[in-house]
Image (cartoon, rainbow, N blue to C red; front, side):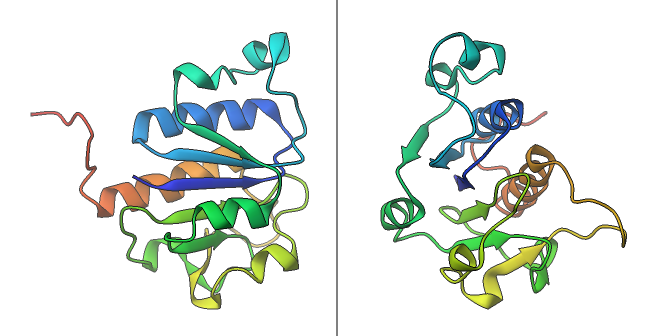
Length: 157
């Protein structure tokens, strides 16, 4: 349905939660290295990152490689400095959402790849820290999926 791009994620449980979100919403997760964790062994299971069984996950050596893979997708960044609210955008299947790491967000170089009209933000109260990465991804994915009539979902009768 959509592509979620995490640029240099640092916290394994956040990525584990996002993998489960992708599994339940039909999204593909793209992880851009370097990662703040390993994708092998006991660390993976402990953090809920046993992704092979849950959702499609692609690991990319860098952002340029990832964006080449997603060349056909409309790219949106989600960052506190975004120019529009995520809820004011009309999303369509195949769109890609770019999120930065938990401690630094997206770099200016990463944002340079995104059309300013597609740099979106999640509203929050002034003076507060940003939302948790997994929560931010969930907000945007579910809004985009809602706009697309929850395509592929098992809906109540």
